Image (cartoon, rainbow, N blue to C red; front, top):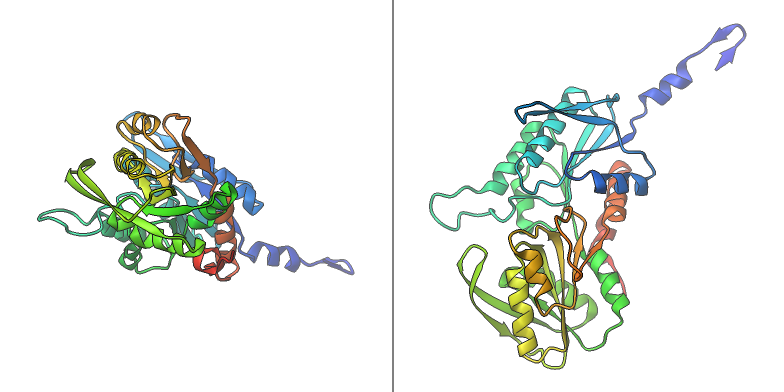
Length: 330
């Protein structure tokens, strides 16, 4: 602004002082972070993950983030380097005087270790919550925690997004009659009940007993699926043993078709082989974790729009409850 022969710098200075949103990505979730930034209307922030010959790495922000709202996108699936990289990004952002740091964790790894179910084990999800807070995160944004009560492990706000906002439109577009929803295990009952309630349909439960982790000893179906199109819903697909076994038993019980919706495609071990050889019509997953292989039955749906809206609402101090299933209307 110019007055007479004097030039005032107040207007540019005010612009500099206005905090802005900056979205950065770790190595593991770069594909998703780019989509989130595009949906938000921003270009992805510049950050370099420098690698040393011994495997050590160092995140370096290549632009100023002083006073800004910084959103760091990184899923923390195995290997543990993904979690460590996120922690170091948070620490670097705090030391660079970021105004507000949100860890955007599409898939919150180690969430299955959320309780002491046998002697002398770690409650790893609580440990991760402590690490994120200690590193300097002001907020965590994630999707479909294995157990919703993990939010209580944090002493900072947690935005827990629901993949039902993505899966429900997909199911509606199938335009299938005589649907019934199924929980592949007792732990998924509440999640499936909410979706079944939305569609005003019945649900059944596949009750499983395990020999050990990732190995099922027996499974029974509680409910009648004869002559129905079954939709299985779960948060994680690991080896796909549970889904494959569930689909087989449901078809034996008279189901016309079986398809599954799982938020996080961990897909380890023989998962791709199990899915390809299963009775499943399709497995619909989110892009919270990059796929390590390919399978004709696996279909990936994007989550970028949902995260971008949540980020915008967080920045503008608006509610994100409209993104949850209970706020949707048929």
